[in-house]
Image 1 (cartoon, one colour):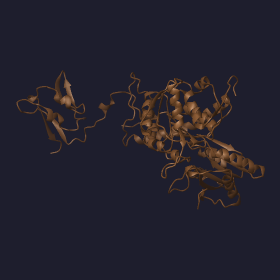
Image 2 (cartoon, one colour):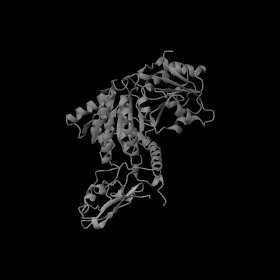
Image 3 (cartoon, chains in turn blue, cyan):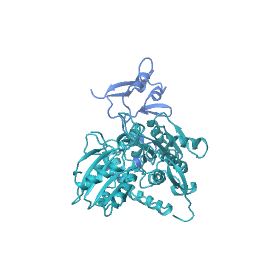
Image 4 (cartoon, one colour):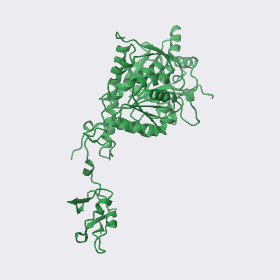
Length: 97
Length: 395
């Protein structure tokens, strides 16, 4: 990809449109990743509410997996997950084994 | 002067002149914190606000760091923004001053030049603004209250010019100008309004129809390019400063430029100086001229962007030149003006002997006799090339 020359940049380094944070991948230094266990999910969406980023996908009001380009692996979702009958719907696994 | 414009003479100190200019500019926002000897500027302006004479939103902040922070937010929102400070207050702003320039926000700030601690001192030298000479701001020095007034009006035009969009610092010498009362020829309010024109912000955070991000993080792939763009903005300011100064002269009778030569064209011996000292030096030069000495002066009005090529051209052919620096670069090679002037002259064949005189720190008096002694040393050869001397210190 060829990057813009200095003469082509917006004034003062401004970003001249909204919603660009999604384009900046911030999940590449994660050491733990959340793994979704669908059979244990009650779709309470605690994971979505507690995620400090916006790394939980929700479709039609139901948990639909993770955005691993932005998840930092903090594990809050797994901690808050009530699961079903004592079994978590989110478990944290190491990225490197 | 253009027909139909009648200037109004007023007796004003430098601080009063700058506050009056701010009143006529009628900025959208002023955020400021008081500090000697600049307190009066924002104090008088606050009175204008309280009396309903301006439309300005005045933000009384808890520190200068907050003042500049508020100015940055205000300017980025799209409001015409001004502030004022001095010395330690400016030093407390330094961090935010770099950000104001990097974000290309056309804030106009008055600074009353005052020494930096320690020892604590409230009087004039140029250490405070020289401390932010690499911050990306335009620096305009004033010789007297009249110039302080005129410079404030021009600063708005320069800062907001679409090819510049940089913050501008207008300075006066602490107490010497700030508290010295002189006749100041002012313009009618409506003429100032016409001269500065409506504000056309380049950055408008509050334009909800066009959302933007200001102050985004730059990594190794973009920071360098954004800093490089600042270099071009400084360069682009030179023709704008000249054009605005020329227009001011055509309309109101006194033209301004980046430098002001005084008896310099045929001078053999010259000094380079900034601020109020130039007024004293003009009298000395007149006296020397009367005795047949070809003395002259190069007044540096605009220190940033530094007019290097103009200064080199103006000093070409002089026998000896003394730079008068009202601040020092501790551990460096001479004062800030000297190092820049010497750099500007370096490639010039037959460049004049150049000596540096650090003077007036902490408000130490600079009188006609002292400036005369500098000219005497230039003539008798005791001003050695590249020497750095301390004028008026007990040793």
